[in-house]
Length: 433
Image 1 (cartoon, one colour):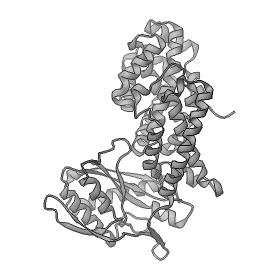
Image 2 (cartoon, rainbow, N blue to C red):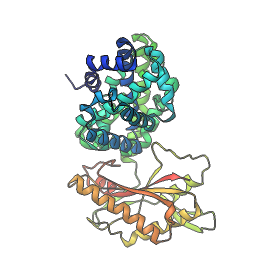
Image 3 (spheres, one colour):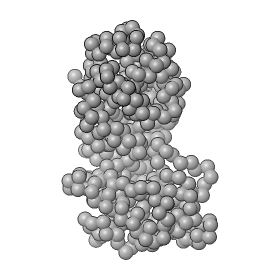
Image 4 (cartoon, rainbow, N blue to C red):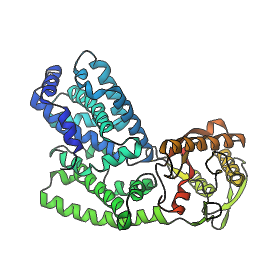
């Protein structure tokens, strides 16, 4: 039988612990048990949704690491003892980080579903999330991508565990998501998530596996956050079949676009991927920052279009990432090549044209060599770009941060030299406009 993370979580909350929680909270044991039956899949679904994004997966990985190192799994009783105040307060903080302003609504729904006081439901939520994070840390391979893969493999189990009568869609909204949001979000973040499955596959399954994962996400989201929770099994099956068909068509296009639709070619002499910049366009920057003549497919043009579009909003969950098309490094080092200077100077000009904008730099490598060494190298490269941008005149306030992700979040197939060349890159994320 395959591993079921939900069942493992239920196993942590033994009859003894439920009894202790019942006494501590002044509630019936049956009420506590019913609340936990809804709390666990709710927490897992929130984590699952977060790890489908670049920034969210990193945030969840950090929470998992913290709870794993805290030894929380060996001290669940501490939530109901002398240290309860401190532990529950920390748990409440984690809930806020995961669900934001949705926490009160979720607490109210759990309270109404189980018959517990709102304060009791809040305490159980604050206890469950740290415990679940610790459990994930115990069973995942580590890192944002490992955690995302583990949770992705549990989609069906999470959906099946959501009890009838607990419909969170009215509160969770986009956090819970729907089929359209799942597919759309995956389209924007597949470069940092789905391709990891692609590179670990082989032969004809190379594109099938991420496709199946995306379809499962659509099915899961529809099932436990949509109206399907209250439908008959026949109706659910019918609607999910239609959903899968639509999602399959959309996802098939999305995966193809992300993996293969890149203008450019591999240069065997330099061992680099050379992007096709496209026809020249002239960018007239605001605030007296000058004019730039760049390719229509260039980073500069894409960045300019985003910053100048009043309707293009900042995505605080997935981020607004733009891959650099012409910033390269000397092999195995963080030394920026001379050919990269033109694009970096253009980025500085853009930052001056939009002085309120803030950017985050991300560094990436292919998957050859030791992962730890790749992460270190990618961090040095991201830092090197930040240093150079400031040296070329970018304001210190324009750069929010820099992070090296190593081989995580590939944008192309690491089994080919062309794909590996594309994955050795830096990218810029617009944090504010």
